[in-house]
Amino acid sequence: MMKAIKLRDDVYWVGGIDWNIRNFHGYLTQRGTTYNAYLIIDDTITLLDTVKHYLKDEMFERISDVVDPSKIDLIISNHVEMDHSGCLPAVMEIAGNPPVITSPNGEKGLKLHYKNEWDFRVVKSGDRINIGRRNLDFLLTPMVHWPDNMVAYCGEEKILFSNDAFGQHMATSERFDFEYHYDMVIEEAKKYYANIVLPYSSQVKKALDGVSGLDIEIIAPSHGIMWKERRKEILEKYREWSSNETENKALIVYDTMWDSTEKIAFAIYRGFQNRGVQTKLINLKNSHISDIMTDMLTAKYICIGSPTLNMNLLPTVAGFLSYFRGLAPKNRIGLAFGSYGWSPKNIEYIEEVLGSCKFEILESIKFQYIPDKAFLTEVTEKIEKIV
Ligand code: FEO
Image (tube, rainbow, N blue to C red; front, side, top):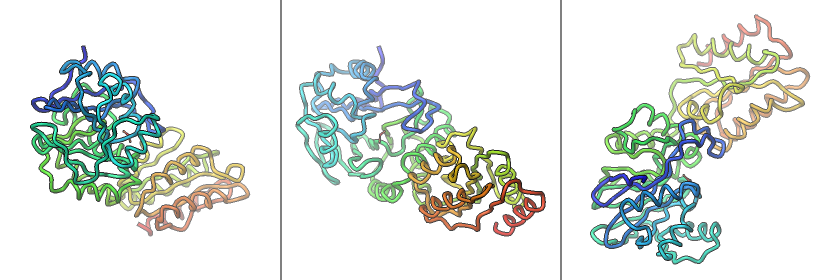
């Protein structure tokens, strides 16, 4: 039988581990993920969130390790997205439709998802419910990651059930930060922020302000491992990432048709290197867009290159730009580059996306057909002057 994992006396992790998932709506989850549900055994037996539908049996096994699932008295639904609400119908059925605590947008979203008039009890920021020896306080955190998100705080246990915030996509049998390789956890938290949370950085700041006065010993997110020993560090990291602070780092992201755009990419690379800027050259043929976003999170210079293809971009670059625009990083310096045959449409398309992010845009670098040595030297010198 799958076991419940104890966080505190009578507080358990009862989630599911998704060892095999490698694509989470376009995000390469190379280490899998978990969906974290939590169970509090008190006068009111309370389940916080559920798991993705296909891990239902695992979740019920873990709950049954502690209590008969039919005895669940109350459900807290911190988030409608189906990786957390997917087993809500099953829990409702087995537990005889207990009340569901959710946000105003949570109620709307759950009704639209499950077409069911359950006993919703809507809460807003500052509301508290008593479940016996413990209380749960709620803070609405809209757009971290959907309009319905909220977090729950148990002051008696000093646990923040933070839902999507502070998560990481990692399938591990370990549940706490001190049990695992910290560098790997922080890298996955960074990737998660860059690919999921980044567009909502201003809402993240509000959420951080909202929890700043709480005495927290455990941050229990809805994905990955829980933060205990390193909880202050992940809070600091979220402050840093949500401020769009960058390092003196350059990313050169490109694809190439007949190697001309690649030659320009290397010339740009040499310019940054000569100035001692940490630089990464990324050919989109060999890299996943979600990994590029992790590098992008702290990069100051974003250089994007493509040749023109049929009055457009190479599909790899177009796909990356579409993903990039949606995640809307801010406060960077952008550069468009590439070769072309008869129309420099490539530059126009790339600059349009850089402009939509309101980047400072450097003068583009383009060349008709095959760049010669003199031009490439000029490119390197130009970058050296900019940096
Ligand atoms: Fe993990 Fe927004 O769901």
